[in-house]
Image (cartoon, rainbow, N blue to C red; front, side):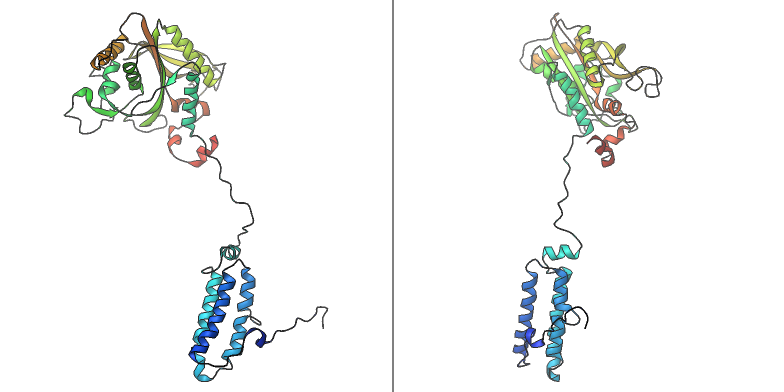
Length: 379
């Protein structure tokens, strides 16, 4: 004897009742009882390993006891029907262990999963970097008293071009730049539909709908037939602004944009304006900011110039006010923008360009790739 106490050995009669008869009815009843035991044990949470040892253990497993008690002592003519039922019971037990009828708890333990551990925590979603940058820009102008105006992405030629003083032969009207909706040949040219190439049509729609004063900022998606590369995309986003009131001057425009650039890029940023041309503003200007990467000293990002070109702006062209008044009259509204006292300025900037500068991104395609490795950096 060793130091361990001997474990008492259960007799077969204590666990497996002897068969009094081997007819079909008796066999069915005996195996039905055992099958019910298996179902009862697997219908509630249990230890899969303990279940396996109880039924399939090599020495004291219940299947072993059934074989010893019934199969070995059965008459020859009863061994076949008894063996068939024995195999069916064994398959039922093995199916339970494999998870076919096992409880979720047993299946989890068999798979090596500790279900007592805390669940995986889903990280909160974040704004897309373009949406975040767009909202930052809009917020700057909200603080200056501007309101947000929105409009359709499918626009008419009148609002997208004609009312903005684009002559019929202007390059921006070329189908190489503009995505035109098919099947518009039967319509008058001003009513033909296209994907808006800028958010400027919303400025026209706003002035047609209301008289001065107008102070709006217009964020939104625009479309152009551009080949995708590191700095261009056929779909991109703009934020435009419009301020119309009495005696608005170019100095008001400069002060507004200088404040906005400092709010977006830091109080140390400087701005400068260069003469430019846009059909809907006169005079027009391009706006540059001092390079935020080298503080204006010159680097690769600013091409050693110390300045980065960022947006366009200008005073609203009187021809635009004339188009607005004509449209107002066509809708039965009084003229509101043709007086000498009414003036205004407009500006527009690309959201992607500002986001690329803010975050040092070199390829615009990253914004549209859906690559989580890129997007998670903004979490």
